[in-house]
Image 1: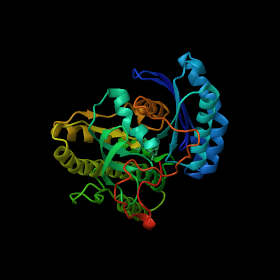
Image 2: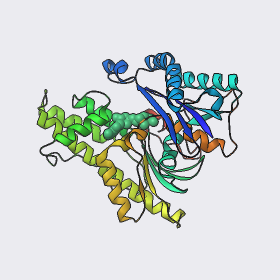
Image 3: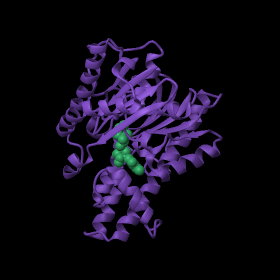
Amino acid sequence: MIVLGIETSCDETAAAIVTDAREIRADVVLSQLDDHTPYGGVVPEIAARAHLEHLDGLIRRAMAEAGIGFGDLDAVAATGGPGLIGGVIVGVMTAKAIAAARGLPFVAVNHLEGHALTARLTDDVAFPYLLLLVSGGHCQLLAVEGVGRYRRLGTTIDDAVGEAFDKTAKLLGLGYPGGPLVEKAAARATNPARFDLPRPMLGRPGCDFSFSGLKTAVRRHVEELGAPLSDADRDDLAAAFQATVAEVLADRCARAIRRFKEDHPQGGALVVAGGVAANKAIRSRLSTLAEKQRMPFVAPPLRLCTDNAAMIAWAGIERFRLGESDPLNFAPRPRWPLDPNAAPVIGRAGVGAGVKA
Ligand code: KG4
Ligand code: ZN
């Protein structure tokens, strides 16, 4: 089975060709970083226009790299949400057009399910597994029991962890996107133990997260140190922030592991996914935790952690081989929780967590 995947839910335009034999035949990603950098974050309208401009060309490139034509495809999968709606519409309409013209099945993929199932594409991980999903808009712990079967064990009550990285980078004057820049600054730190930041939720019952207090603590240090920050101050603060996040994530995961093992005594892997999973300090902290708990640890290669279309094609394959596809009147979903039964979390301004992709 050969499937074309399309991803347009945020600021990466991406197309990929993946087979059910877990082979990535092509995987092209165009980052819109330069378009959004002047604004310090993603501007939805600019993103949608850029997707529209580049998607056709990227699909052509992916097909050429895979050495196939539209006649060789078995299905077309596109991110159907959650995400910035303008971009999602561009991807969904393009996929529907190809499906209609070629008489192919169309699969609308939940972007989060794309991240969640990546470990099965890369490492053939068996169900069930415990997933820490950490991206720009999400921070969740989920028991993954099957395709489309997720049980949320914890979520953030305020900021997503990627968002915390991005905001901290801004406070430190590092620019956008924050995650990779904070990681680089932390690696340059000469005194990483200099700042002691609060560890939100550490040791508290449950598996929920909170990051807004941590960000506020960074802001207070920046104000006390006074502008402009010296390179040493900036790098030491970045290191403190990253170490604190890693510790909090490990603490929450340790609690989730207990619950996961109660529900699934046969065991399963600890899997990390989403853009923040590209962070080496966080990966290494989680890997140590998994080892202690005697669980296999799976973290996809860095380029499959951040947004890409291979994960969308793969999630499409997983659903399609269970006999699922979507009608051509599928309506893009700006919100699309993985676990619709999870209790809403009252966070910032009364809005439930899991707002963005
Ligand atoms: O999954 P993703 O590419 O897009 C969303 O679906 O949100 O995640 C993007 C997020 C951004 O907040 C970015 O700062 C963060 O992932 N990120 C990182 C790293 N690389 C990307 N955070 C920490 N360390 C990194 N190396
Ligand atoms: Zn994502």
